[in-house]
Image 1 (cartoon, rainbow, N blue to C red):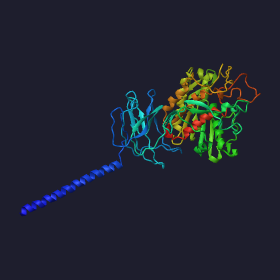
Image 2 (image 1 turned 30 degrees about the vertical axis):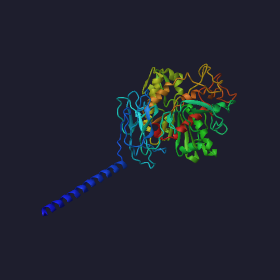
Image 3 (image 1 turned 90 degrees about the horizontal axis):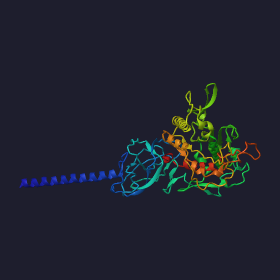
Image 4 (image 1 turned 180 degrees about the vertical axis):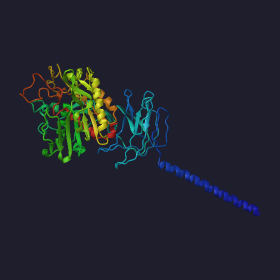
Length: 527
């Protein structure tokens, strides 16, 4: 009897012990699941191929934008610089959960895998953390890229349904293509000119900085409609230039234009636009007391109340104009392997706008005979496009080695079209009869120089934004000074008209509106 009772007690204890252990195991299991859900682990890189059947992680789907590369365009790899320039900060995922969705015809292009990269980074900037979702089509057999590299090129945008928790909307910019707040694809280079009575944003009376060559109204041009056209992209709106906001963007900074007289055209436009927010004109002055003329090439205007400067430095080619001895003669050459001697002035700028194109159409540069020099060698003959590319590579190397990407935003403005009819500038070419924009530009051919600039900048370590104004400016045959680039009655070469530069107010104001538009976006959103 005692043995039977002892056996019963042991059995009961064993059952209680077993029940306790199993209950603890179940509790630990549920607790672990709760902890994992509360703190998900995100892999550095996650791959999805959306041409398979739907799958789910049990999360509520949320539609986000996924970028896929245009099939006809190769991607280059850009190393993304960190941002400490005082502009908006680049941020990435902090918490992400992803689930797949139904198959979509845009998911796979020509059978190529769409790669989704989800990255996690620490926030050390002091700004709130926002999230970034990048999905880019990869070319087959392309090498892997590191965590701090991304793809850059002309992008199209498609929709994917992907479940993401704690994601904020992101606007994406790539060159001239942007995604606006309504999630539409927008190429700001495609659009039309719209007549707008609210323009111009200044006059030759309100702006004291328009030099004679651009002051068409002051030189006797009577028609005024050329001032009142506004560029309207076909898929989105660009903001009207706001002088007060622009001055706040450049407060305490250096805004520097570097290039030929067409860039001086844009620089004078910027000065005039900014004067719209200045109550006391005496609070703006040229730091060396210079008056703007064609003869002087370097200017720095101080906006005292905003502690900023808006500067211009002349360089026709970005590289050094030199001389060399050929036989017994000393001739002018262009050192395409050496940066312009004035480059020290460009250093330390917060925003740099470069250009070169206009002087590459002159006779010497086109002919390329005993003109282009590398080291001690003067090439007997060198194709102008080849020389242009080598000069751009020299400039790109200088930017990569001397410009701090954490401080400076770099832009390169595209070539601006001329509208000579019946000859060139020195052989009877004219544009005086043009008083309205062209309705279409069916004969427009994209300049090879622009393509070279885009190719070179894609190979750079530094991020350079290509400010493409060529096609939109091509409509504006009415925007040139023509015979109004000098005061009435002033002596001038017979029959010579200016169909290359632009009246102010006029077309360069639109270039600056685009620049203003880009500067309002985060540096990272240009990728």
